[in-house]
Every structure is written in C-alpha cells, then in structure tokens.
Image (tube, rainbow, N blue to C red):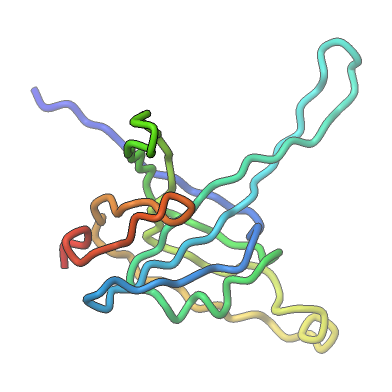
Length: 153
C-alpha cells in the first residue's frame, strides 16, 4: 500500500526586507525574501499576553518581475513547500537550513496610503503555479553561487 504525504506551506505575513533577484548563468531568476508571521501566546507565570514573530526565508524561481513589487512591509500570501538543505562550512561542520520554495505569491492589501485615500483597489501580480524545483545552493553569506546544474529546466 502506498503511503501519502503532504509538504505544503501557506503563509500570510509581512515582508521583512525588499526581495532580491539573482540570475543563474543560464538566465533563470531566483528571487529571495523573508516573511514575518506572528501569533499571540499567554505567559503561564505572569498571565500576560505577548506577541511573537517567526521569520520564514522564501525562494521564488523564474519570477523576476515580482521583485519590484515585493518591498519591505508589504503583506503577502505565499504558498509553496518546505525544503531543508545542508552544506559544510569552512570548518567542516554540517549546516542545515530550511526555506519555503514558493509556487504562488500574491500581494495583499492596498498599494499604499495614496491609493487607499482614493478608494482604489489593489491588483497585485500573481506568480503562476510552477512544478516543484530542486534544491539550489544557499545565498550569501555562504558564498555558494547558483549554477544551471542546480535548476532542472
């Protein structure tokens, strides 16, 4: 009997930094950005509520046109899958990191105060669903570049 599994992530949060797009030597675009999500929890000792934030690193392949719209503070919807990769640092220690490989990214909310004042509705570009992509080497500060061999298209 075949077993089933699911690797799906859905995030709604705010961009922590402007998106950056880099290109492989073959011209494939790799856009990276971080998304902050939050939740409230009650401290068991004091009974006080506190807000907590979790940061998620996101990778989006072949959508270089979205980087101009993905700016710090904007609210986004991200749908994709989790991917954990590893490498050996200069001391020979294995380092693991997990990121969200986005298949769909949608800007939420208004375009800013000016459009909200005029009552305009925001129309954000959407990245089409793409087939899952294999792991690519990590971005800086690990100084491993993305090559065409890392992208299977």
